Amino acid sequence: DIQMTQSPSFLSASVGDRVTITCRASQSIGSYLNWYQQYPGKTPKLLIFGASTLQGGVPSRFSGSGSGTHFTLTISSLQPEDFATYYCQQSDTTLRLTFGPGTKVEIK
Amino acid sequence: QVQLVESGGGVVQPGRSLRLSCAASGFTFSSYAMHWVRQAPGKGLEWVAVMFHDGSNEEYADSVKGRFTISRDNSKNTLYLQMNSLRGEDTAVYYCARTGKDIAVVPAGVFYYYYMDVWGKGTTVIVSS
Image (tube, rainbow over all chains, first blue to last red; front, side, top):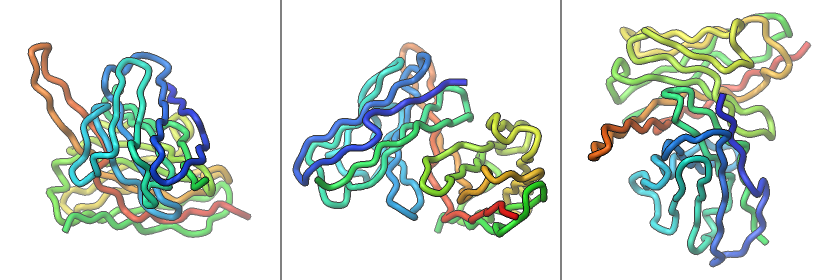
């Protein structure tokens, strides 16, 4: 099975900061990488699929990049509503859509 | 509107069984592969199982293989998860999620991108004696 890792696992930042979260796959997955946002006690929300394509309605301050085994999620200017946990997910193995362990973004 | 509603969660003793349901509405259920995803208290998301749109194929996480069975009834727009031989580590919120798909046609070929675009609010399963 493809293993996903994320770094950091925890991130403290201020409103207006540029934030980057890294996701790595244990083997090449091309651009088959999704990103989700989850607030505590709430349902996950799809942000990005195909490594860099923004889901409809997602603010443009979110961007994704990468291919192969190394991917990043960048928030260009952190907003109060962006404090949440972010998960990457590989979609290389057809429908076995396994997740990374998550990165929690908290207010500094 | 597009909606998924899970039910069937509860408190169950180790070794016992439970069946979860996920009722879909607002879209053509029979056209979509469907997933179960779980989240243990204070932990991350764990993919559990998937079933193809027509029930022709299913896959499971190693952690539940042989104990859990995913199924669907397209005539009732409902997805199920039969959970047997439950363990304490199965305690979690269980979500059902729809598979979204995007297709990119480029000179190099055709690429299919899968993701989970619609989620239910989840149902809680607690395995405890």
